[in-house]
Length: 196
Length: 167
Ligand SMILES: Nc1nc2c(ncn2[C@@H]2O[C@H](COP(=O)(O)OP(=O)(O)O)[C@@H](O)[C@H]2O)c(=O)[nH]1
Ligand SMILES: [Mg+2]
Image 1 (cartoon, each protein chain N blue to C red):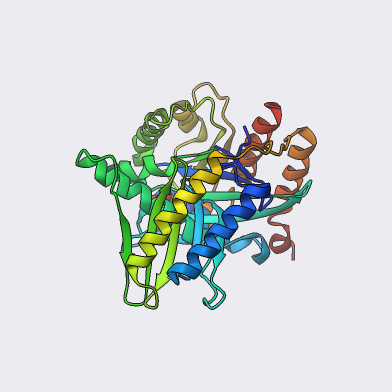
Image 2: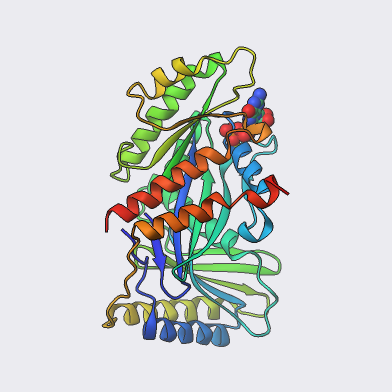
């Protein structure tokens, strides 16, 4: 849930990158870190295993600057994608304002994508949230793979209604990284503005 | 909805600030931080003699997630939570107390501060802060995130990457 800190004059949001293991969530945060100028970002924190798999989360704070005297800050998190880290994933969703679902275009990960999305729905329920109510976009990553599953097929599996904003990406090359972040953030801002 | 995690503003903020400074003086701890359970820093104090702290954002996020992981461990054993959360290294340690159900008070100390004192004065500070928060009678400031605010913030977002992608 977005919060305001009146004494520090900050408005805070939390965005979570969700998706199956190895779909490219950590890569997104690293690329954002590498491409955002220094004054707008904080340190990146990664809690990972020796072989660089996310164990708990990655974390990157972004500072957009001030509007009406209040600073807007986004905290970006990734979850560990592997099935057995579900309790960690659930903890990271606490207070979430928006989700970027990072899907993998590899044919053998189609089912993992679907399972991860179902898992996201279940974990959101723990916080009495429904995916339809949480600002949410889809990033279809690894479009560079020679055998990448066609977009249409991935969308049919992950968003049959076609209502969710979807972005093709090659996160490792910083392609399609900025767009889903901006899109989900704007949905979060819009949602807040509409309530008042 | 845009609400504060704790009603820390105006006179209450100033009073809590005094409580934190007092805690640092009496316990001889380095830093005292109030963080919310989603990992945002709400306020902090640093002892005049203490070295510059590490990134407070990193610290707050790690404290909040460590707390929630510990609470999940406790739950596995049918406990509501662990009563005490102390971490002690060779030179530096942290001590954590819950501050209501939305925030945490964390004291960071080094070898110059006896753990007993840190615990005692952190516990006392928590009581004082709870009391202050219960007694808030100032009206909460308001901030209306309207369409113009959303548009302006969205424009900042558009500029977030520009410096580096178009040098
Ligand atoms: N081919 C390809 N590989 C990628 C892409 N993005 C990330 N990867 C690779 O996929 C692997 C897993 O990425 P990582 O970000 O750790 O995945 P996570 O488990 O979702 O955090 C790494 O070896 C990345 O280099 C991409 O767009 N294309
Ligand atoms: Mg990862």
